[in-house]
Amino acid sequence: MKQRLLEFCNEIGIENAGIAHIGPYYDLEKILRNRIEKGHYTSFEERELERRIDPSLTMEGVKSIIVCLFPYFTGRVEDTNISKYTYPKDYHIVAREKLESIGEFLKSEIQGFEYKAFVDSGPLVDRYLVNIAGLGFYGINSHMITKEYGSYFFIGYILCNHGFEPDNSMDKTCIRCGECVKRCPGNAILGDFNINPNRCISYITQKKGELRKEEIRILNKNHMVFGCDICQDVCPHNKKIEHTKMEEFKIDLIYKLNYDEINSMSNKEFKRKYGDRAFSWRGKGIIIRNFEYLGYKE
Image 1: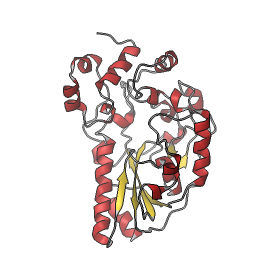
Image 2: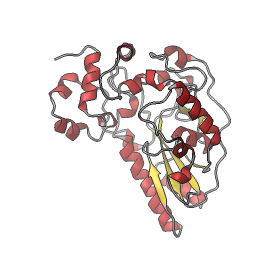
Image 3: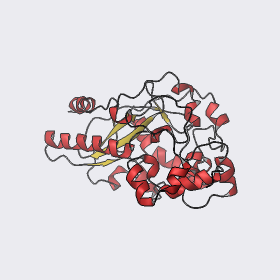
Image 4: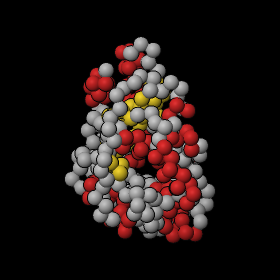
């Protein structure tokens, strides 16, 4: 059945899929506790530590976890002010549809099959799942890396009540050249496979409210109004990588946002035009705020 699962994944455009065991992940717990003690966590993260390390607290009767990667790299663009992952249609929509297709397929193949699918919305640490499912290895910038697509991919996973045989974790890391550490505008990358996400431009561009002086200073070291790609762009593992084969991420791309256009829109108009884009989730106000901290004014 595992082979049939992988074949179906390929049929719907998912080249990279693997199986993670269900833990509990006590090795991960130590890492997370250390990060919490140092204040290296954000408002985006699940606060209940037990739910991050024990899949059975999210789905009763879980026996295995199907982990899928969704590559999105379509090339490098010079004139842009948003992160590469936001160029195409919102990956949450695309990946969720694919995961639901897998779940429904397995329902038709396995009697009594039950599942729960997640794209960014679940409590588990998806990058950790990628590693233990044998799909990628850690970079010191905290991204997961694959040979074919570097670190330019999204992650989705399915908790299920079928005991697929787990894959082996990938026992390697990036080459640790240190380029991402040196080039990070906020000095968020600590060089020991940990980061301080509160100093990461990607987080700063997405957090709510007014920014502190230090956050504004960091933001102005780059020109992005949503996200940041610097630590990925300078990574040797992201040189000479393949472009995505997923058609959903190759069409109707947006590379740059315009301050005057967005500022003149109502919230409703913004959602109508950009509601299917990953940069829209915080609303237009956060993007306008970032533009203005970067010196844009009416």
